[in-house]
Length: 420
View 1 (cartoon, rainbow, N blue to C red):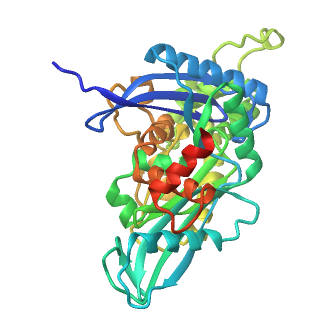
View 2: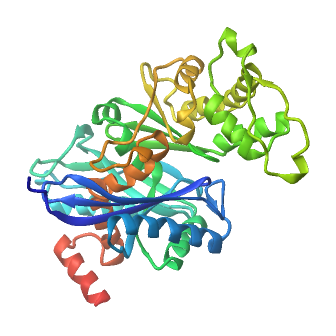
View 3: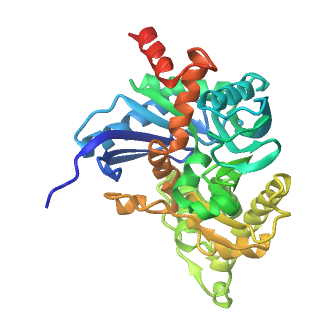
């Protein structure tokens, strides 16, 4: 059987508070994505999604990338980097230009988008993504492609996704210290949405909740694009810490209890189920007797912290206007989405349908990476082949090499001249 030829190599890295994972994929001539190699290491030098120690983080990044390179039997020099924290923010800004009844041309679209970008005050933030929504002609919205139509006024709402500049610079510095060039810094909610949401969900309206180790990102998609984003400084590690504190355990013991025995749901048998606690390697606690913990006690601690997190999620959805919409579904993903019963628990608390979001089933994806904890990593690979990525690369050329009125070809020529 003939195997499709790989025409393009794509690599991505997701630097989280608990793990650093990377993936190398190949895109075939038919557009199919095939995973060639992946790597994962325990995260070091990262706190609440922020890089706190570049040297430690850089070493972890190197090890994860080397593991993926060995499996893929190739070396990479560029990589797409996910950003899950760092003051992520988003907003929509309307912009209009006058056409005087003339026919809409491609250069009119470029002029419109350039006007929106140049007149937008980012308040010191770094713009990561610029997405035009549906266009409007003489005030009538809902136009996907206005080229060829006539109008007096051409308008569009432009969505800006931004981040604080310092975390972005620290992320870039860490990747370059590992002798790699970051081809793009991508807000992970954008990539995660590509991986675990359907086109129909993104179009009709859906809330995506990614619960990481230390940070939870709540984003809203409507009309096919991300229109709202909110970050909550609570994650799965906080649940682990609550368990460790309540029962006097080490974090490793508490994490094991949470993953293997924890649940967001309760049953009558929970009071009778006594949980075995793994022996500690810590000499200072070696001779101490392990506490007797029932499953009911464990789940009570978990639900106590979940109540706090779900309340914050509900407030974020209300702030973004999603709480007032009827029938809007919530999709939960991220490592903590693997907690037993969390979808039913959240559905009851939020009063709307909730499902668990899993990564797209790419060809060659290892079984270990098919869980909700790797949705953002797979999404970063998918983002590299999306139209959004191509648009963003054009916008970067636009900003750096001449602005409105230039053809794409001329912008690429200018970029080539300046770099070579």
